[in-house]
Length: 123
Image 1 (cartoon, rainbow, N blue to C red):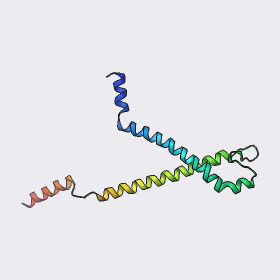
Image 2: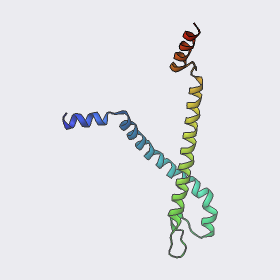
Image 3: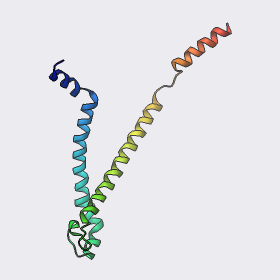
Image 4: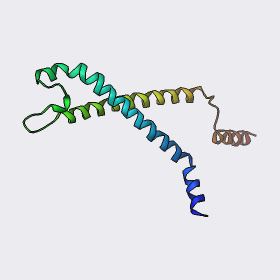
């Protein structure tokens, strides 16, 4: 098999395409969450703390020479992403459970075989 055919076969596998889509959506989702934290949450929640520290930007927060403002913003972003992803996964799992319950539950092939054996033994 030539290199190009092998590469095409590799790329066209479902898992690779799903991973590529997930990475692209993840990047866009990261930008949305970053904007949410930087533009909405940080100003709303941290404005009193920033005003008390006489700092107008979270990146300028420092304690002596230790600049912890960016780290604090990164922690908030991580927490927000974690909460949103947890909520999405929980919702998806709930939908899967509803779909599984909606499927008719009949005897499995093993159960059918055992019932046939039972019926044969009764005769």
